[in-house]
Image (cartoon, rainbow, N blue to C red):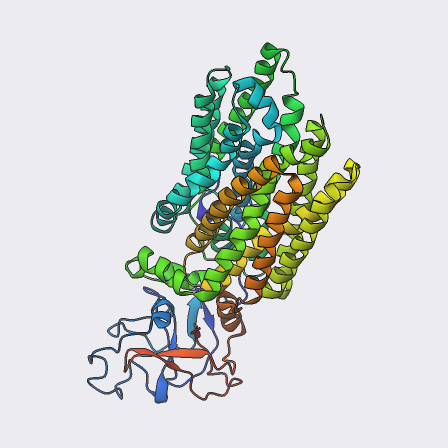
Length: 567
């Protein structure tokens, strides 16, 4: 049984012993130099301008009551980080108080449970496609019918992503996780009743429920990483969460060809094998749903980073889901990332869905090896994901890493395309592994880069939009590549993807890298003000953000909570 929050082991951030949940930060600024929110409403501290605090009696009598100047669109997002009520009192204390941060031991359990049920959901996505010829014969349907068992995952995501991200932002992480795990379990059990040749519509119904569950799963990795993990491990945690989904795809490539061999001359045996696979999946899904109910919590007792502390302490009434969506689409770097992520991930979905058809075109009767090639592709990608996550945590070079991996994915796709027909399947294993290492390794990079350039917008919303773009491109690419593969050859379909990936490289190079979350964490951790021209402060006398003033960065009094970086 999971321990309650106050019994969990936590690692407290560096500093003095906590007082009422906050850590004091040394600072001997005179009155009027530094102001901070009270512990009843800690949003962010703000440096007073012209040596006058907003609480100082020297402040102009009408300054706080005059109409506030409307903020520019980019200022509205950042202003949520700052206190806005001029009537709040800030006691004159020796030293500014910043929120206490701590790392909860439960974070690893939350990450593990999520990764496992995400794995089962991904397994159910690909379990039909990798043995598409077997299911075509069992249900007496066309290959397009079997392709739609995979594409329904992509189709369901697009209209449902907005209510799903709204639910995550307004009702929280735990409810979203329960819906994802619960629907995944329900869909798996429905499939158990479809093991008869005339019940294709039942297996489609179960797959539809699993596809709805996916909507509540794919957007969570960056959200879980940000809410539960510290600044030095957040990228690795996100990569690990994405890893679960990739592992499920790998198992989906490996197990179905083994559990359900091509025995279409013995329909009864084939039905028994399919039933074994479905019931095994249902049992695992049920166990994971129970663990989610017991152990999955909304958030840790204390925020893991200063950036999270600011967001958690903001009044709920200040958040608007509609405004958050509008802000994201006004963010040009995010829009470019949205397109490039959609192209890359859509290409991966297309290759995964059609891999069986691609391999069997050149290597007849190699269903098992087609699954093993898919396994190689994903396992190599899992290694790439972890290495990319560790690299980001160490260097914070988001754009350079993203662009480099994109280019190498394109190179891998070109090599894979022109070595398929050489007649040596071992070469396909090698080129498939190379392709997977970079293409699948790109997935967590996109999530984390999006969170950085869109902070303080919700991680769930940005991740959800990225996944929606991936599903749209995935459907289009699968239909187009499938048509080219059946009418011409797999080479034509793969070249089609290569062209689009080259376009993605160009668009990735145009993305402006503004690491807002990293700058927030770095500024607070260092506890000083750096000479960065993009830093702004909130002036209560005029009710708007204004450029930074000339302050000695090395002065002990230069302590503040949040620098506002306007893009």
